[in-house]
Image (cartoon, rainbow, N blue to C red; front, side, top):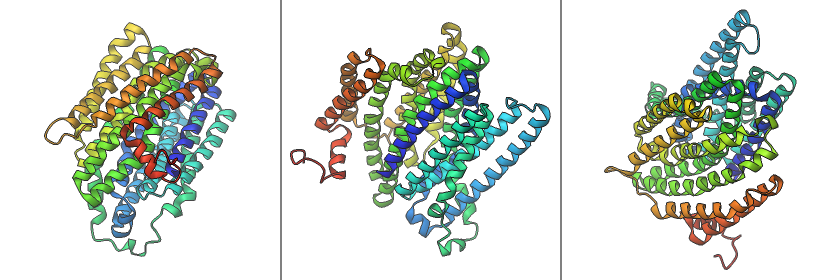
Length: 486
């Protein structure tokens, strides 16, 4: 429950923070900030993501005691990469001051992007350590620290120094500072035998991490390069203001989906890893199939609900200068963001458990190719909105390809067909139930649509036990269920 609470808090504060920064920077500077932030995420994916993935796959409370070289290898690799990246940031900053000493200079922005990438990587790594050891309380405190510091530093910087580079650096520093109070809780220095490592064990461990993580890094990098490329294309063809409109819609939408998906992944993937550790590969595959049904059962109604309340959200909380383009881009981006979340949190775990991650890379590359073709053709036909359509088509292609690889062949996953069909039907009924309220005044439409959607979909999930969610709720809260329900 602490992990779920952490993700709810993280989603809410990130949503508010994104709106606040967009309001204070304005469309053009927010477009620059969003492009640099996307670059920081790409850097984090290329340099640090393999460590996060390896921590969630190979580190645990048992491993912490029995195989201390796993943690030693993770720490050593992160420290070396972070120091090298910080040195590169210092060089870029120095050159930027000499060549173009303005906050908008490319070298200065590149240095800020590197600092933000280091901060993101450090936070994600320690979050993965807490996740791997199932320390929900520590994870919640880590997220609280990060969000509190990010809100104060980033919003305060945007208010006092409304330049993208300073807000970017403030974001990186906030994530670095959030880790400091948690170092003792998440550290392994209390293990006295940690220094007695077999010769060469750390090197072997790093090779294991690389073999496991590099294909997944390649795929994740492609999915991060895609929005970075798309924002750059919009900025180059339609200006940074248009890139800001696109970025706000993409950022708020992706945070909504990725926050819920990552919260589920934190719990479900570790359960599958435990199933493999204690009961073997077949049990893990069965758990992954159950996880897929749960992920789709929760993500699909969220996508439909987000579409339903977009007009109300735009009128109530989106800065006035972003209104209009925000809703237009959001409607085009939602299907692709849903596809990306299903890939990351429902299909990728199939190949992670099997330790055969090359199909993930192939699907990502094909999606990027479709996105690239769309970038060439669609903006000429329908304007900047063509970039959003290209992104959605690329992500839809990737999820279809990866789904076919997971569900066909001799090692195909057993598809939970009943649960997926019921989920689709329940979502359709939910959408039909909220449509009459979508055109109300925004202040009334938002709570009415949310309440009606939750009631209708929740009732259908309960009575039909979609994805086994009713059974899970009964197991988790047996004493809180009414007697008739039990």
